[in-house]
Length: 243
Length: 240
Image (spheres, each protein chain N blue to C red):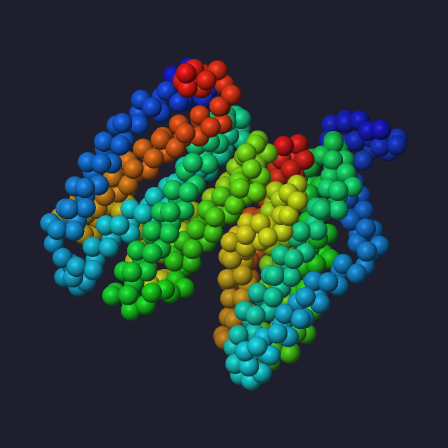
């Protein structure tokens, strides 16, 4: 098992492993997302209070979950990079950041669209919304810091430290609906309890969440391969690939 | 000439322990600050000028000003802290003192903590002491003054510690100023919420205690964790 972990640290091996894993996640994403979309938009029943507007949940919840998961994944990769100096981990963190920022924007935007029919406003300074907006600025800060340093070990380490500092916001987002009595409703999914919705509503949501995760992993593997080639362009194995 | 001997160091024949090193660092910072006296007044002038802008820009009506005063004073103080951050490590970086700090056998996080303490003492504390005075200009209700002083004194210490992380990470960059604000401001928001919240609570119902306790908790967390991130940031900025 340990040899496998050590091999992951080598750019050549991680390039190959990413290539081997990639198709599975693409297939999962491309099967789950269309099924989830049709199921959630056409088949699942309308809500008795919100009518059809509740269907925004099928984009809103997966993107909001991903916005947080991606940052946690970046923080884990940063910790691995800082502790064991594994460069592949830093490359992984760097390719995840734009996707996470995009998911945060999507979560905020879809929430805003949903807010109009249900809360009667585009925006409110609710704890969950504010902490999510902070999350977006943390993503932008991480991307901007990497841009300011350019490629190199120094920038990579600085970004890793910032990511680890920024991860304090994740529990704040997670528990903002518990600690403060806010407009935003509590979590839809939980590992320990059954969802309050009927199965015909939460099943397509689960499919959508898994589809988003599949897309995230597939895109990360795909972009990680590009990043590996770009950064290791002088290595012999990349030259051999090009020939 | 220094040699490490179990947590203490021998410098010119004298044994300097952890505490002695901190005291030396604090005295050095204070001496530098005294010789550049003008820098001390700048954040205070900035605070006064920003506070002056609001009555002119929004409305000089006391009732309106009183309702927004806690937030305005806190935001202005926060921006004044932010402006002072860029110089926190800049001078030491340029003249090579930071390298000496890194080479020192004393633990770097402790030296960083001493440095940040002086930054708070010379920037945060004066801001906290002056803010009530400016509160008079904004017609802050009488019940809010003590809470304003206490919340700023506690809150600016946390702001110094968080800001020093950003300053340490960007000290090696030629134009790190704007980037520094981008990195640090999102992390300042919780302090702002509880700080302004304490003053508002004191004005409305006289119960500033819970918000002040939360500010204290944030400070305790920052004191425990931030020095390590600051030290890490400085090592990255100097060694790459």
